[in-house]
Amino acid sequence: MPFSLIPTRFRVSAALLLALGTTTVACRSTTPSGAPSPAETPTATSSTRPADASSAKAGTSSPLTPEEELRQFRQRRFGPAIEGCKSGNAGDCSRLAHRLLTGASLTERSTFEEALRGGCERRQPDACAGLGALLGLGTSATQANMEQALPLLQTACREGSSIGCAMELEARPPRTDDQAAQTEYLQKASAACERLGGSVCFTAASFLAATAGGAPDDARTDPLLAKACETGSAESCFQSGIRASEKPGDGPARARALYEKACGLDHGPACFNLGYQLLTGTGGPADATRGREIALQACHLGDRTACDYLGATNEGRVLPEELQSGRQPYSSDEERKQVQRRFCELGGAESCTSVAFALGDRAEKGGHPEEMEPVLGLLQKGCRRGSERACNVLGHVVKDAIRACEQDNGGQCLVAAFAYQQGIELPRGRGPTLPSDTAKARELFTKACERGIQPACERSR
Image (cartoon, rainbow, N blue to C red; front, side):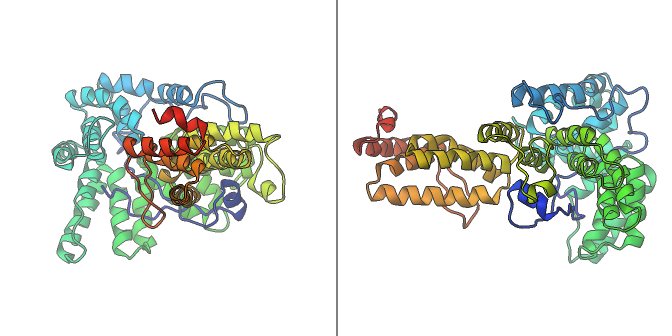
């Protein structure tokens, strides 16, 4: 579903690009979003909580496994809302529905389902909108099914859910060559915005931006974004913050306030932008301790840029500008690998790539092709999460291994066997896409064993 039509940008410095290991400037895009209308916004009677500190203070290594770290974070941040929504608390149901549209993981979606179903049975419109979102987005156990989702979204919209109205509209955009349909669509979105505020105001602003060819008409979109933000749309607050940050004078300070509000509504990218401003003293006083905590919240909320930033800067201890001047964030390669592995497991992309490079370099220098098995897995993970470096290197490694194996290089036959065993998926033009093939992998393990690569022999049986 094309929820967000306004381009989302985060202009990063050259130093930050170096810190994250990227070589090209790219626009920062977020997952779709929606948000509560005034009636949906959590109240004092809601069991939801404001943005909390992370399960492990940034700047100190967590004693927990990444999986447990995430589990505890989610329980603390969303556990009260899950219990409240089951009982029909409107604010709690709104928070869960909103989170589904600001980047909820598959694990979160599955965790929210029972609570949203309970809230919908108790006639909470946002809970029904949330169930519609689950059907439209899919969960770890179910495929996306928009046909089943639409009736729930329509009912939720009629009963006063701004999220339901927004999702219903965004699921069925008008044809670009049908002016009458576009006019009707905008009128419907604007009327719902006037009545409900929140998410559907952002939908109206997004549509105006899209029909303006990607150059928003500030006189028309700014009031809609402002109303959406004021009435609970995290994405609108975030987008308004982006636009404010690009303006001189008090723009960065206004951006900080807007990011703060969006972060409190569980918007991961907004939390990262806020954390970065706090770390660098942009738009107000610097606060390194809180900046690191907020950046870690962003990572826990699924923002990969935040995870990679923390991995590259030793959990925010070193600023990008300091990296550019040559300061090293880690006292040893082992410390670097340990921290970056953690942020890879927490959801980073470049963090996985960096760990893969370190392990691959060691395997190559030591002449241990058997150590390439985890390297391929890490590169695949980084590539799937958007690391161009990972995709490029993975493609070259696999192509070279297959070619060298055909020329009877036993060590490369072992690497090729790992590739067929795991299965390799690469974007078009980046290299071979190999389906997982255990028979082919066993054949290559046998070939590697016959050429004297002992670690392959046990795998060939």
